Image 1: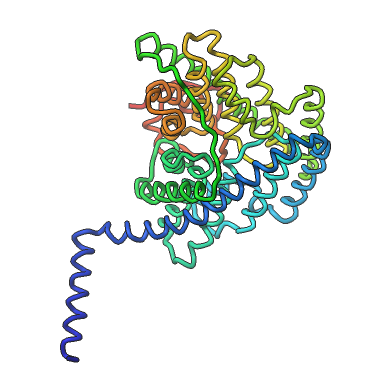
Image 2: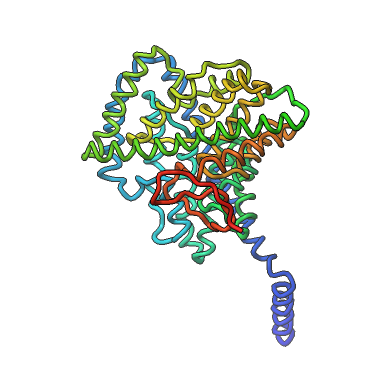
Length: 438
């Protein structure tokens, strides 16, 4: 009996080596499936808690508008928190991108409570911000805590962070396919890490499932009229994409310039969101409306049903740029949805396409141009609005991406393969130049 044990062990080892040799990806698939389920549970639960907190915060603010008076004090508090205790994580999404490019020390877990509290406070007191930045940072910081215990290589750690970003994005917007592709696109322009596709997709799907399991709702958008694709409608879609791309480039450029202005004119960091809070709170009082603060979901929904004023997108852009450039926390993406959807709604006055379709095109196309993620944005539009309008979404997203000239809201975003880039910004000139590298 004892003599048979070595032979059995040898047989098992031989079969294991055979499977590894013939199907080398099998164990990799198994490993990343287990890790993706684990990440999906953690990230999906974190996103659910964050989104439900944000819904409560928004409802409370809208029924107690007096809290907006304290926006400057809120800003000062956020500034103090990050200045004295959160300098390592103040760069936010750019820290995630830098870590993916060159993994060094583990992302501090303190990023999770800091970005959560900063975002909730920003929305509670009336700042204009989004939510994706918070979801991505929470997901990335949570996931990176397991890179050392799991003894991941540098390459696998990059994949882990990409998968985490996918889970954060997919769960917070309810778009798992877009979440996976966004994670592959957003940190490197023109090049995709194909090794990360499977973990990113699974993590995004599992995180979305968990978020929905916790009863967290997502907004539904409707585009009822689908025009037939003709030569003229394609040209109209290109024209819309051009406008959306210019809008995205302006947003990105003004965001960086305003941020630099705050930094150069106000030396003490906590005073920057304090001054920004005064500006935003004063503007809310002068306008007499809370339409342009917070996420702005009701206005986004309205843009699919009605032609909105031509100034809506510009005012939201100004509120968001001041809020985030001053040092408040949140994200840019949902405000970009607002800006794009309201701009598209306005364009229906001049472009003969349905209002809802143009609002949907703007919703994703301005986001595409500001983040250089045209494929992810196309999939996001299909997941949110249906595949029937897929051609229009794809055209507007790609054209917007090209027209933005790689102006990006992410400073750390890099160009992966300039040989396959149509539009490339020259550092020494403040302009955009069209060129085709063959």
